[in-house]
Image 1 (cartoon, rainbow, N blue to C red):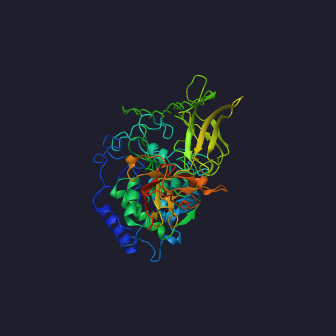
Image 2 (cartoon, helix red, strand yellow):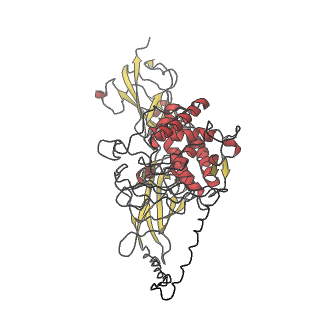
Length: 577
C-alpha cells in the first residue's frame, strides 16, 4: 500500500477492513489496545494550537503522517505460512543508523529515567509513521538528513494554525511553523524538548540521534510509566491528538516487538512527500526489483504509397512536404551561484540576567548570543565556541566544558543546558566568535548557589517533652528532599523560639531548651539556641542533643533549609517530678 503522507487515511469499506484486521492482530498479541473507536478529529474540528483558551500544541502540531500499516496475514494475501517480521521481510527492516539512534535513546533514558521504561520499538513506530525512518535512512555520517524533512505550513488551512515561534531558524518559515526532522517536532516543542543525542554539543531536530532522544524524553514526561497502557496511550496522543494516529502507531509498535532487523542506510525507497499545503509534489513511486518494464508501443502499419497520377488525366498529386524540425528549446536559465554573506563581526548577549542555579541542578536559562554583521544584521552559519571557566564543577549537558555551535538564520547560537556542579561559587561562560581575524569574545557571568531542598520531614519518634534542668531523650532526625529525591549538602538552620504561638516572635529565645556547641569551654559558655547544620549524602539531618535550663513552658523548634523547606516542632518543658 503506498504511503499517504499529507492525507489522512479515508474511512471506507476497504480501510475499515484493514483497520479491523490490524486491531484483531493486536488483541491476539496482547499489545495495548487503542483508546476508543471514535474517528480522528478533522483539522477543522481540532482546536487551533496556541489559540487563547486552547490546549498547547502537540509535538507535531497535529501534522499529517504516514498511514500505511504493517502487513497482515489473511485471505487474499500471498504470504508464506511461516512469514513473520523476524524472517527479514522488507517491512520489518530499519536503516542501520536510525535503528542505532532508537536503541541509544532507549539506553540513555533507561539510565536517566528508569521509571519510564521507554522501548526502542515505540520510538521506531513513531519514526516510521512520522518520516518513514528519516526517508528510508537517507542520512550523513553524523545521522543528519542532507536536507530538512518539513511538514506542511501550519497556517490553519487543513491543519493547525501556529504562527512562527523561531524566526524561521528551524523550518525556514518566518510566518508560520512547520514540523521538522525525522521525528517531526514543531519549533516550539523542540525548544522545550530538544536533546543532544550524539554528543556534538548541538540540539538539531534534523539529526536522528538528537530527535530520537528528544522524542523519548517527551514520551516520558509527567512521570509516565510506558508499561502502563493509560500512560502509553497518553504519551502517543500527546505526539498527535488523533485516535487514528494512536492506532497506527500501536500497529507498528506491536509489529516491531515481534521482530525487526537492520538494513543498510538508504536501501529502502523513500516514502512519498507531503501533498498538503506547504508540501511538495510526491516523487514517482520506485519500481521494485523484478517488476517488468512497460512493453514498448507497437508500431503502426505502414501506409501504402500514393500512386502517381496518370499524365493527361487532369489530376495532380501534390508532394507531401517534409516534416519540419521543431526549433530547439531554450535551455533553462542557470541558477547564479549563491553569494557569500558578509561575515559576522560581533556578538550580542541575549541573556536577561546572570546565569544562576543551585548546586546539582539544571540552569533554567541557557547561554545565548546573536552573531551580527557589520551592518548589525544577523549572521547565519557563524561558528560560536562556548567555554566554561570556574571552580564550581559546572558542565554543559553531556559533561563537556567546551562546545561549538553554528548560528541559524536569525544569527542566534544557544549553548546546551548547563548542569550546576556541587560547589557553590562564580563561573563564566565565554562565547567566542570563530573564523575572524581577531576572535571576538563575550563573557557571560553566572553563579552556582547553595543546594536547596523543597521538602523537610521529621523521621524520628522522639518524645518532645522534658523536665526542667534535664536533657530531651533521643535526637531529632529529619530528611530533606528536592523534587522527590534526596537533597545532600543542603544548609539548614535550627532555632529555639519562645512560646507556642508564631505571634510570640521568630527570634531565638533567651531561655528554655538549648544546644551545646563543640569545644573545651564550660558548658555554660557553649549554650546556643540557634545553629547551622548540613544534610548528609542521603539528605538526612540529625540535630544535636537538646538540653533544658530551669525555665518551664512551651517552646518551638524551627528548622529551615536553603530553598524554604520548614519544619516547626513543639517543645514542652515541665516541672521536675
